[in-house]
Amino acid sequence: MISGLTMEQRRYEGGRARGYLVGCVVAVLLWSVASAQIRYSISEEVNEGTVVGNIAKDLGLDKSTLTERRYRIVSSNADPLFHVNQNDGIMYVSRKIDREEVCAQSSTCLINLKTVLENPLEVHYVGVEVLDINDHSPSFPDEETTLEISESVLPGARFQLKPSRDPDSGHFSVQQYKISQNDHFRLEVKNRGDDGKIPILVVQKSLDRETAESHSLVLTALDGGKPPKSGNINIIVNVLDINDNAPVFSKEVYSVTLNENAPVGTTVIQVNATDLDEGSNGEVVYSFSKSMHKNILNTFDINTSTGEIVVKGLIDYEQKDKYDIEIEASDKGFAPLTTEKSVIIQIVDVNDNVPEIEVTSFSSSIPEDSRPGTTVALISVNDLDSGLNGKVICSISDDVPFTLSPSLQENMYSLVTKSPLDREKQSHYELTITAKDAGQPPLSSEKTISVVVSDVNDNSPEFSLSPYTFYVTEANEPGTSVFSVKAFDRDENDNALISYHILRDGNQENKLASFLNINSETGDILALKSFDFEVLKTFQFQVVATDSGTPSLSSNVTVNVFILDQNDNAPVILYPVSSNGSAEGSH
Image 1 (spheres, one colour):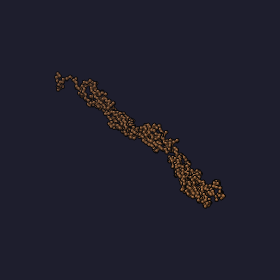
Image 2 (cartoon, helix red, strand yellow):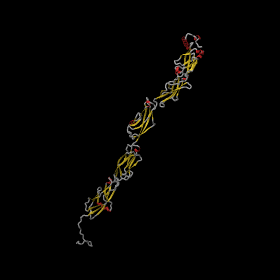
Image 3 (tube, helix red, strand yellow):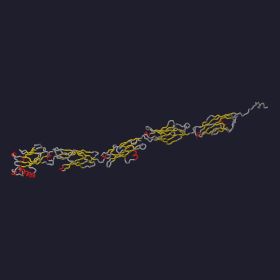
């Protein structure tokens, strides 16, 4: 029995058209009550010709009557999905059915068919539910998606992802999401009802762009099939930089040597700092510390872009042998971060200073009787250079009676006598002292000092003759100079100032000296009486020459005097003397 229709109605003979109209009205009424009289279910994608069901049997129709009546489907798609065998009332699949194609917008795919059985007309409603099979994999809108997340975000930050879609329905639709193993992110899934499950990426560990500037994740969507089908999307998380890193210098210590007198523009050293940030946060500029002394700023310059330090002014080791320069490396972030680093510049001495000689104590005059080793002068030498360039050796010529004796104090010398002096041989010396350093090539300087050998009374007066012999004519005029002696002394000044005197010691040889006198300054000798050849023919005496030194020195000379005869006596006749003592012929 078909509910709602009587046998009288089925046998109504009002004609096919009228019966069809009545059937439609009844069908509408029935459709409002139930979706179908008979309901079948088949799986999608079954092969063409697959039996859906036996309508005749399920409606309780007599099989024998089907040969006289025609059974057909009157409502269906333009491309029929099903057909009924006229002979047995069995409904078959006309072609493969894709549930997602037929019922794209519905979670339940129920196809309602209106069938008619003619002669007499009967209308029947059949519902065929196309059951879903897991014939689709979940898929994402894109193969890859990119997220940009600042490294400053805190753990717990959430980022909704585009969900995966699966045309299958029910349990075969997307049931869960998984994310690839990583340290920084986890996944949450939110159920949005008709919108399905929505994946949400949650930051679980702070991001550091300098450690990893991007993260590659794989998000997998799985349906409920057994085994499940899945779909993937690659998620690239680009970590956006914040200025959280200060520049870092490439070396712990920057140390370099630089020759003094290096030309302006000479590259001293190049420092390098890197910043792990990106963009302006990672761009580094260099400068000298604001606390640097003006002298350093006048001596060196730095390239703000390259970190190259160059010579700007005079480099003089003697003024400064070491520079400790503080360099700053700053990024260009909105709030710049700065790192300081010291650069040690050790100045290398070059031999650019000649030795300097200074006479710290000097006796310009030295007695000729000074012993060897007597100090004449103290000499100090100085060389502003260092090392071998500042090591000075002093020397003096070998052909002088002086030498340089090193002192216990460095770079101090004593100028001393090395042999006896004799003023009478050389009274003046021009001594040239040479100071030479040990640089390559060496530099030297000279200093000349004058040394005067002062006289000591070490020479006795010397008479020009010894002995003296003079001839004096008798009858000389008393009180006049009759002859003179002369002595000289090789000393000088008072030591050479000579005075004369006649030795009057009572000696028989000098007895006649009482008749003589001598000028003490000139050595002229005067006779105090006339000599008479007939009385005295010869005599001698001694003259003493004495210098004025202290103590004085003297020497003697013997003077021999011969009296010359003059014709000052008339002849005398001498008579013979008798034996009795009287002269004969006196009568």
